Image (tube, rainbow, N blue to C red; front, side, top):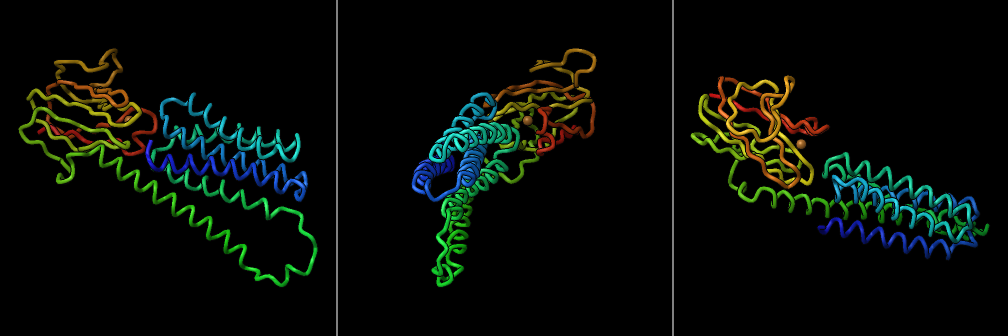
Length: 305
Ligand SMILES: [Cu+2]
């Protein structure tokens, strides 16, 4: 848990509380149809936001994140619909269920940084759905409206929503920074650490869906160990399809005819080492075989000199 997650969770709780209050406050001034639209909007947006949040926090445990997200969405939508009768209640309930499910899957699939952007967007949408209460209410037809300064309400809404987006993105920035500080404690002075000359013991970090370093230099014929240090909360590996090596110690895999020449697998928050001797000079591309990770940028090269 970090400050950004607390901020999102706290805001979601406030939205649900406010929506409950507003739905009872405006219940006599909203048509049934408006009540249904409101409970659906709130249920869906809260569900999506909570889903993205839990999906990101609990990456690797889609079951739990889906359950929690559905719970949040259903509570948000159903309670909000309660004031408007059974149709709105059901509408909110189903929308929350769907939003929670979709959000959790999305949070599981996209990277942390992308998820934070999406969380900010959906959180802002959730806040904006609260503004629908006064906007959709039945207004008494008086001349009073003409006397008002017409732009105050839109300007107010714009201020709230843009403030929300900026606020949220500041938090997520702080969090991404603190995460990268934790993951690279020794890297401050170290520029892209390409070269480890004369070093037969190589450490590769996998953090935030990137390898560090992305270029490894090893010597032909020299026994080398590569340690994959996985700091992410999802599994990662290093694989090279064709790489002439002599394996001293098999870390993982290397069975069967179609198996790659080099495969090093590290579970979430874990470290695995593979000892091998490169047999042929050249440049070999390595990558992560977990679906989507290579596309995300989990590639690098081993240069044998
Ligand atoms: Cu990976």
